[in-house]
Image 1 (cartoon, rainbow, N blue to C red):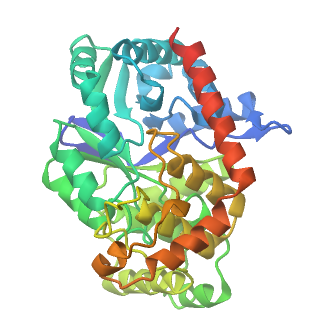
Image 2: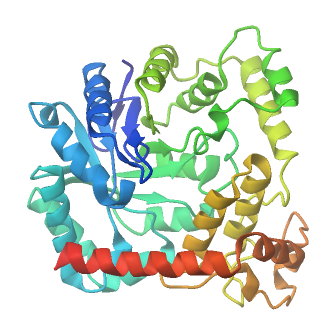
Image 3: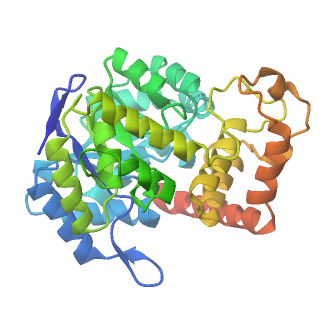
Length: 405
């Protein structure tokens, strides 16, 4: 197993981390397959993986419970355990401490080694500060309830940099892969966090598994030109591990076969190992994928803030991701979860666009944003999507009442 030392914490962490959002499931209701998931976790730890990442909502709240069970019998002492504060359930200052206590209970541990504010936005962070989150985090660390403090993020790079600067974080977790160098935090955000001495945890190195799928024929022809044969998974993971700034790459493995494949790759994927020709080929593949996009938004945020409250980059990037990989239901759900304010109570729907034109004046790509937002609205909004999000809001309300009372 390859290990990388995170300077901000001093921990020697496995370059491959186990993400516990996509554990093996069974049955029509997709419940966690407890025996298979436990075997997978034990095998990963026995192979040298020592960073395990979960979160309060994963597998409808069951991921933390399963992980707490699986880490009994001496496994807990062999790993660094990461989970996240579900800030959307926080309405009062005491909620944070109650949620952390519930997570300790579920995970059967007195300390969370790496504790993140989950998928936080700048606006929500400012609200959380008024509720005392800084005091809560620092007290939890003094008391030993958490070890190291960070945040996970899915917004734009400028927002990311402001969040990095607004608190004495020890690490961050960002989405990063060869398609997302200019999206979300992107390469610029990664380098900015590294320049501040922060630990870097990478999620979605395979873009939700899409980069592991059999590629389109024109892209496979590009891969076939490589002097060394690798699977699409190998190429995607090697590209991320080629960055010396990255300390852990999380892979949401659902089978022992996937684990075996990733273990073979990590042993060979040292930093700065890819040749210039290989890096150029990956850039060519990324460019070929991007020709299939609908909008071509880079997430630069110059169009923001929108006077009507639309989250323009999220809208356009969701449209692009759908045009790349399909799977309308998954993209519709993720779009509506953010756009209807499930996480931060601010509606950001594409249909709110008033066609004022201010975004098109500021867009460096000169994108026809109002027209694209109409396409987003027609594709992802509608009665069924809104009903789904209302049910999601009710579910979050119900979980909050049950989990922090």
